[in-house]
Amino acid sequence: MLTSLAVTGCSRTVIVEPAEDAANPKCADIMLTLPDEISGEKARTTSSQGTKAWGDPNVAVLRCGVTPPGPTTDQCVSVSGVDWISKPVDDDDSTWRFTSYGRTPAVEVLVNRKAESGNDVLAAISPTLSKIPPEHECVGAEDITD
Image (tube, rainbow, N blue to C red; front, side):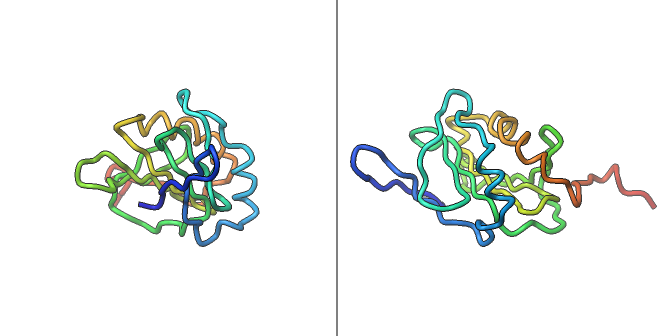
């Protein structure tokens, strides 16, 4: 998992490994316009540029500037006009990784599904990402023609 907690004084900082392209200027724009709260869970301080976390314990952890995913057969969902590739991180499906698809920089969100719905988290984040023009979009079998 990409996160852990470090105790600093009375507050806890979420330790998050920065993404490869976290210094991308578009990530700075994204970080400035992300919500301060998701479903009542307040944003927390993180250790790295281009990252944000909500909830205590963590409900969602975001990293901007991850490597944009290429074509895949993994499940893709569209939330508020933004496509997301979704994959479970662990065997019990308690944590899911959602990676934005077709936009650069790409954003990764880890969601603790025992604490919050992935759809609620993506619905809160997607309006910010929708400001980045899509380069590609997810397609399904019904979109393929001979």
